Structure formats: structure tokens, C-alpha cells
Image (tube, rainbow, N blue to C red; front, side, top):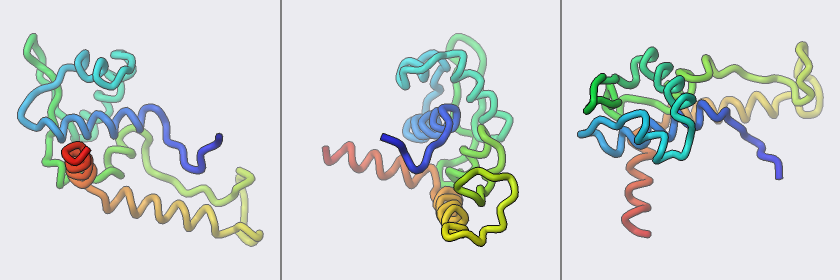
Length: 142
């Protein structure tokens, strides 16, 4: 079954990783531990963590007891920042047929633009703390 909205594996990894770090703010989590928890490649995760570090979202501490932690509070980080740290600026697609030049005057001309605006607004207005608080609340009631 096809999905209407897809994000890259790197963006998904970044969002999951940031959620784990937000849920455990008082400890450093190593790349190895995070990769095991998320069941992903350490090498791929290391590249994602590097991007998050360059974006000013995480800090790393080297050494045997080192690892990663958030550089800012979860309530100060938007999902859009996390997404754009791995993917670059979120751009609008204007044509469902993926044509490079589309004037948007077709029957579905505004659809992608409207959906894109809503997704961007959601990511821009949703804080990391919003999703971690929601997840922790659901876990307590499960």
C-alpha cells in the first residue's frame, strides 16, 4: 500500500533519535546504544547525528562514557528544525505529475501546495516536547 506522505530514512531516524534524547535528558546516549534501540546501522546513525550536531541540535561528548544529548530544551526545538537538519529546507512541489514547470492551473493545481503548507505548519508549530510528552503519556496509560 502506498503512503501519501513519505519522509526519508535519515529524517525519520533524526526525529526518532531526538525523541529518545528528549525522553532521557539527564544522560548521554552513545551512538551504539541508540543504534541498537532503534535497530539501525551505527554508520548511518552516525551520519545523521553529525548533521544534527552541525545544526546545533545535539552535542556529543567523546570518551568511554561519552554520547549524545540535546543542546537545547525539547520545548525549544521544532520538528521542522530536525527535519531540515537532515534534508535541507522543506520545498513545495507544485505538480502531482512532477513536471518542472507547472502553472498550477490544472484541476489539482492547489492540492500539493495546500497539503505542503499544512505539513510545514505542523512541523514548524510542533515542538519536540509535544511528541515526547504525548508518547510518555500514552505509554503510561497502555
